[in-house]
Image (tube, rainbow, N blue to C red; front, top):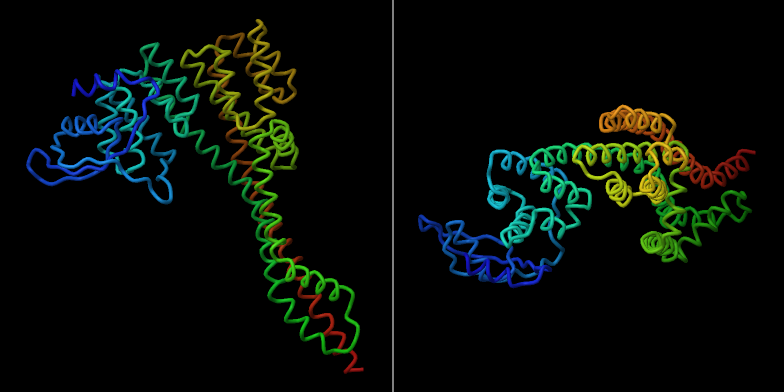
Length: 415
């Protein structure tokens, strides 16, 4: 084990962690097999021997065809709470991470924690080891863990972090639920329209072709649209798909497009209000957690801005950070951004004056999380009948257009 540790110590800081599959026998001689992450095969064998396994075969794992199994948010919350409990009980970090990994039934989480364990055993701080996995441990998580390590209160910080991530996960779920309904209306309406235009309307058009009379204007227009759908089906489906991909790429690559898109989202009736309240709830909850951990205000604001998820909110927070770094009180630049409601600014101002900023931020977060919950419920109750109306008008309009010639023929025959 010492030789393996020395081998890692000679490596640079950008330690490459590989995944191995192994077979071997435990202390009782029973055959065992599994997976383990380590920088080298030598270190992987050393880790297995430490776990009481005598390895007979260790080889690098082939890359999966369809990608790795992802670690869920709830798994990370459970890991954070377990780690806090073990550290509070006096267990070393390496042993704690190792025990949590060994007891995990999620192979993705087990592999992730084994990679963290390797780095910590190599002498790196826990925050540095976590920072190598930004897909699971974001800048906020790493910053709080680093603050806990420096302050000697890592267990308490981890408990606060677990509570924060639970609330943050619940808030994200509500925001996604709010955005799902308008998107679902557009997608369902498009699919139903395409199916009717490509497969149903042409059948009626064949039947009407032998009428020998002029079709009603609405029917003729719908048939022309159907012909366009049939002739250019690849454009009907391809153009929207390409447009969505292009917009997503532009959103990721262009700061101007991202800013315009995020600003537009906040201006959408009902949905924009929910998104803004969700952003304020996330801002105040995160700020409260970081302030409680003793993270400097300017550093907290910088981290929160980068993880805000909205370019407009990010700009407002960064402007506030700049003013605070120049000596201004927090509430004054927040009011000048025009993004934060007066109640939020006033509560934060009171918190600054009374020395209870953490408490006030927590109260604001509680209030706006409840507002988001109520807003999502209200939007859901509004969108459900709207979906029925949109689909009813769409399908009903097409049905009427197809039956108008039949009604016209019936009136002529009856006359």
